[in-house]
Amino acid sequence: MAEIIPRYEFRAFAQDFGMVETKMRRLAKCEQIRESSEIYIVSAANSENNTKIRDGKMDIKVFVEQREGQEQRNPRMKGEFPMRAEVLRKEVFPAFGVAEPDFRREEYGLQEYLDEIIFPHPQLTAVDVFKLRFAFTVNGCIAEVALIGTYSVNNSLYDMGSCIGFGILGWILKRYGYPPAPVVLGIVLGKLIEYNIRRGVIMGGYSVFYTDTLAFVVLSMATLSLFYPLIRAGWKRLRRSPVDVR
Image 1 (cartoon, one colour):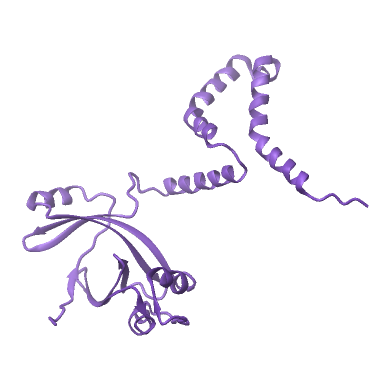
Image 2: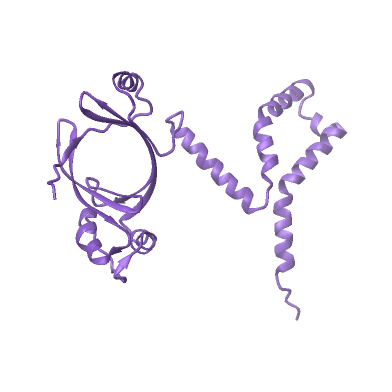
C-alpha cells in the first residue's frame, strides 16, 4: 500500500472572493464541478480534527501542524457503514476527544450511528452541509472555489434575526390555525396600507375610523378576523372539557 503523505491546505472564507476568483478563472479552466451533501460531526472538545460523512463513508483527517497559514492534516481512516463498534471505539472516538458512549450493538448503520451515538451525546452534534465545488489547477497547485451551506446575498445578523422572527411567527400562525395567505398579502401590501392610513389621519384625524360607518365596519371585521382563530380554539377547548355535575 502506497504511503499517504499529509498535504498542506489553505482555506479562506468570505461572502465573495471577487477579483481573486475572477483571476483564478482566467488563469485556469474549471476542470470539474462537484455537488455533495455531507454530514460533519462537530466535537465540543476538539476543533482541530476533521470528521465527516460523505456518500455513506466516514472520513477522518487528523490535524498535524500549521505553517505559514497552511494546515497539514493526516488522513486517519475511511470506513463504510455499517461500521463495527470496535472501529468506532478505537478509530473514531479518539479523534473526537470525548468520552466514548456505551456501544450496545456489534455494528452500526449510518442512521443508527447518528440516532444512538451522536445525537444523544452531550458534546457531539451532526451538521448537514451542502457543497458546490469548482476545481482548478493553477501552476500545478490544486485550487477550489466552493459554495458551502446556504448561500445568501447579505452577511447580516439582522437578516438572520428576521428569519428567526418570521419562523416563530409562522409557527404561532400554524399552531393556532391562521391561514397563511392573508398574512403574506398583509406583508406584501403593508407599506401601501400604512401610507393610506397616514393620509387618512392627516386629512380627517383618528376620529374618522369610528365616525365613518364604512371604516368602522371594515376595521371591526379585520379585528374580528384577527382574533377569531384564538376565540374558536378557546371555544373548542371549553366544549371538550368535562362538566362536573354534582
